Length: 403
Image (cartoon, rainbow, N blue to C red; front, side, top):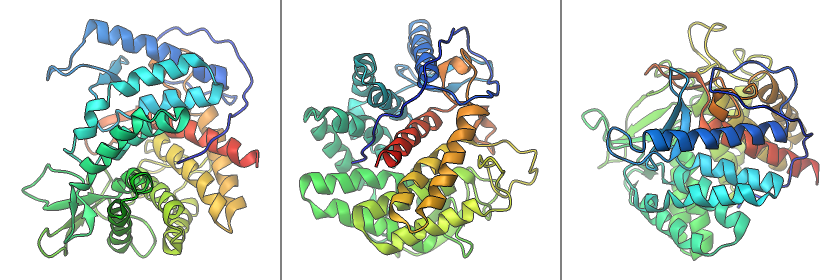
């Protein structure tokens, strides 16, 4: 599992005031800035839970995801695909500070996801459970977390199609898709690789390995960009169609999807030592870092082929994922110094221009992410997974610099 060290940051006193849209910063935010924001976020979560304890479906509101169009906090049920990120943020804060307050909060919010170990309604089991329970186990060593993670892995592999060689991502849109697999699904393989090491059962490893190979064969174009969705015939395993669900067009390069691929293949190399996966990660990094539509600050537009560039929204979440992945990739690659330089630049950009001003964004750390532009959903807003991968990148940066 990932190892991190504490990231030293200077202390700055902040006064937290309200939820609002983000304002650009001129200096990189500090650990105290981050802590103050997250304390505000925790206060806002409790207020929303008290005033609106359930969603329209009657499910309890537990996890902050973003802000609504009116600037209020959006708090969703544990079954949301992003539910593991906020507990993960709290675990990273505990790791950064060593303060018991963050551990106590992390334990509480992690526990709200316990039933999700049985939620096999989509591929997002890894996102929900490894970002929360995985970090909990790594940082506490509490063996009570192991059984939940093992069950989560069992739940995930039920979605594996032997004839396809992939884990099915979604169940919706069944009138169009038979076995849709999205590039995001690479991120869930970490749970399976861990489960194989933990249990000694090679099936978890074999499924994850084959999923990565099949995805590498079918998702990537000659320029090393990735398709978002590949749909497979469940009987023959043949590719039926390639399209997008969140990008600009079927042929475009949706920025967060490219970042998922970079992170996923870097992580897969960590567990397998299979050089083809390392080479794939390097190819993806090349597509991103050498892309003519990549801005100078290395925070990409929501899609590298969006028609209105340079007047398209940026996606901070894609940048944060990319930075975290590049820090790991630089440990494996002969181009390590180059990758670290680029990751450092991304963190500098995120921690200054794209950081929430004190007291804004309901307490989220970063602003200016894009959930789904085609759906007109979550445009230029904070997102919990942007914060998660930003903190992970900070930790990985310090780990590298302390070696």
